[in-house]
Length: 311
Image (cartoon, rainbow, N blue to C red; front, top):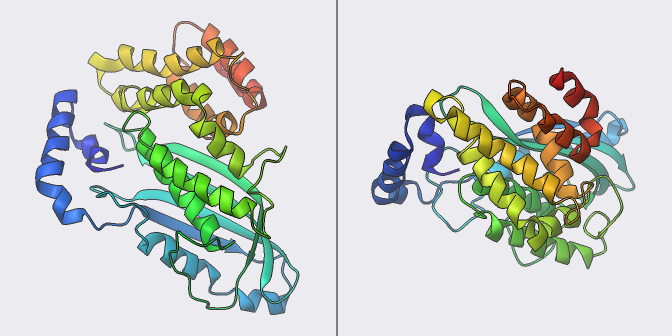
């Protein structure tokens, strides 16, 4: 997020601080109105009848235009847009305007000193119910709940919040609060499924409640260090050891906090689904292999991957 994403061109913490100052004084006014997202949309309508497919033939373009042309925050967005993807699979239609779909949403951010990107989110949301009329207008509205537009807004704020948390400690709080406001309005609507607490693998309200819960504030602070003082510094030899310590700190603190946080929480599930591969790549040469025992306890769905990495 912000001009800090451009740190792939610079090699020191001091230079990064200079770039922040330069951006605030010189560049920010020029980019203050920039949108935040660079979203790629794919739409699958194979499960719909042929007549139904025609009614949603422009759906992907419309929501792509909305996500990429809407400014979701009031702050200046000083750097590259956040790359993200929305993969929509239409599952059924109960009438000409009411649909059920599932969404896979991902986002990423650049890794300092590398051509690689760090996956920030991987979410499968299987309970999206909404109304859509062919070529209807889609407009930003923070006051009223709409099962189509508010759903897109929710994920926009979650994407921006995670990205911002990786550059500033607890920096995404305002965006997570906006996502919570949408959850509350959605939970009180006639399209409440997915917006209220449910015992499912993923729950929109559960994710936001975890993010704003005091029990997870240390995790979010460690999340900042994991990225900004961890994976971003791995490519510089003089910082490699401290970077590894900041990466493992997140895992070790979660292990210590097992009695305070639920390892099955939506937030931790979202984190590990996005990060298990990156954690393995970063820690496969870490001398203390006990770190993988901790990961196995915290992230059981990827247990076999950690076992293989620990060999």
